Image (cartoon, rainbow, N blue to C red; front, side):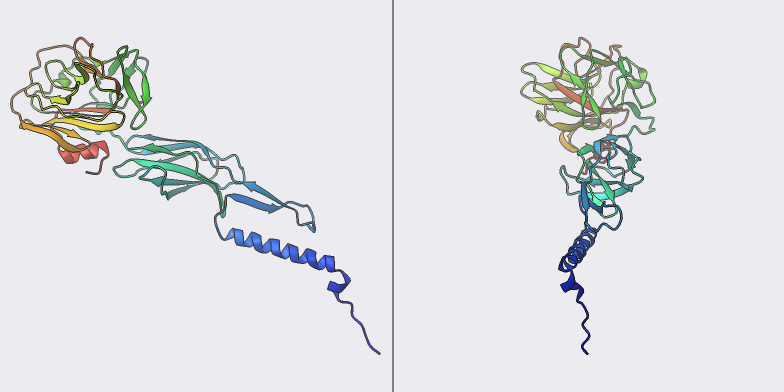
Length: 350
């Protein structure tokens, strides 16, 4: 007698096809788990899921990334709206648009801040949401550079211009050389915000013994010129009759210690540049982006006879030669800073 056993595949070919499809889907899902993906897939049917129902979702990135600087750089963002995300990854680059290197993984998802402490330089940041092997696309990019007001008795004014305190901008040097303003305006700076100059605005520091720099001085700041003076001149900082940095039409920037005036140096329009007017009692030097642009021997003593305010983004005492542009991260020192110190102050590698 011959015994016949039914072949399940022949008996139910549709069942075999269903099993093969399920196996294929499983393989695809497993392969996707081995690499970073911006989408998420999951079986959603209740029970045995014999229908092989799969749902997919795109992991949304965090939003509103902002970078603000002090001696460190603080990053803040709004968390991804996908609640299944484990957290966020932070990426940094020294060039806009990347390439980026991951520097941190922040968990859980509800944490929305991270503090970075990079060395000298300008840094560009993005953030991504992640869960297991899935990662979102980049958030918006934001940039910052560290800026500090060290506890140094030679630092006589250190103005960030990052917050309007009801008509004043704080001085973090410890000497209380606060900047007062009339109709002042803060605009986007080299890091954070900056003071904007034009004819209706006035910025000044009151006359102070701590700003009477008789035997050495350095004025340094980030400057962006929106236009050059059509004629005459425009002040960046002017302590009338003492020291000043003033822009002249057609000839450029002049650094003066009140004893000698350096030759004028052409400077660009429409971009941020760092300038430092430094005098160590023997030599007067103007640095542009950390490089010496003009220098000369200079000895003597700066006179301190006037009591006029120190003007910013204008000239003193009349305040009738405004600068068209912005100034950020201003420091006034009672010492002649070296090139290495100026580069470090500016966050420049030079």
